[in-house]
Length: 120
Image (cartoon, rainbow, N blue to C red; front, side, top):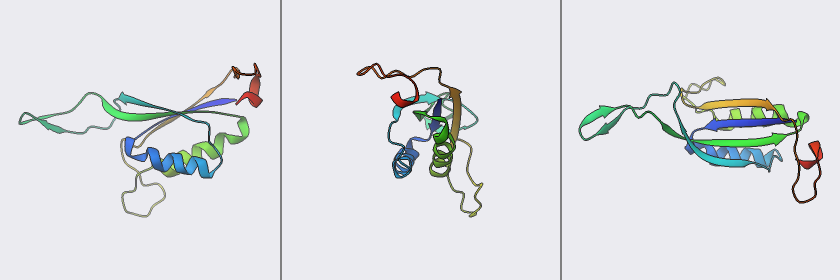
């Protein structure tokens, strides 16, 4: 079992969610978060240019069995990657996000007490 955590742009949430559902990945958790990576977005505040230290993002968490890891990751990448108009499959831009895959030691369904992959 794995826990897939994706940090994406707020504007990409709907596209990612739709694609996950099309690929029968329906059990997800979504949170609004803020963070800072390489993305630097200058804003004007009271006449001065400032770079905000934290940028609003969306965090998606999905617990999956091993056979769903690749399809889940590929779906998120395709839906969340921004296009720079070149038509290259590797376009994208700084700030598109990150995906983390971690081992999930145990999953327990509270309602039934069921454990493991079948509880996902």
